[in-house]
Length: 205
Image 1 (cartoon, rainbow, N blue to C red):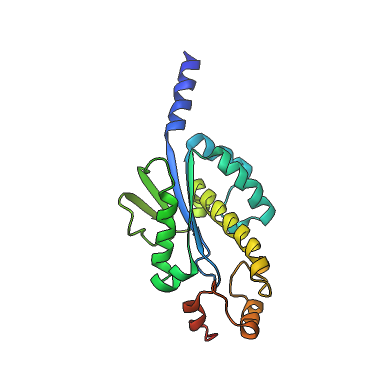
Image 2 (cartoon, rainbow, N blue to C red):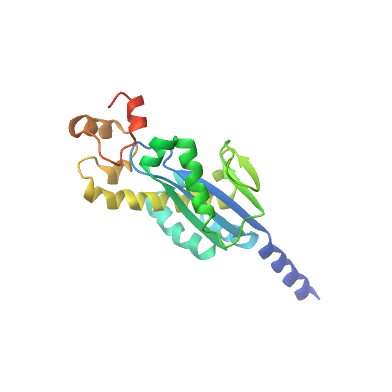
């Protein structure tokens, strides 16, 4: 009888799904914005917590890469989407970020019953139940997992782009507007992957 109860509890834990979404690269001046969505069972949430899953900003690059593989293994489903620098310039960062989120969500096998989103902004194009959580990547494992998938995916792309766009230290600054990055822009000019609308605000173009 006890075994049956434990079995029922395990099945119940595997049916409760947490679906979290997060973006990375919103404030960068170069390259796309990335979003990821992760679907986790209650059981696998706890396993990932034990492995040390938390907000990607609080982890070292090495730890993020280790956790990336574990999240792919333990998630019931996941999706990664992006929106280009050109889309960011043409649509504005909020709409482009929403687009990257919708692209990530479209990769899921099933539409989530409820979506939890990091930050205060609603995902306006999403036709479904959603909840915004301030500092959600510190409170929900699915959001933290999504932040890691998005961060590692975007960082990997930045490292690959370094070969084509050398001289801006993209592999190091990951496309963010560091003092060093701005100094290289002044010397070398902008590339087709720099966000012109962002750089106009900084009076760099």
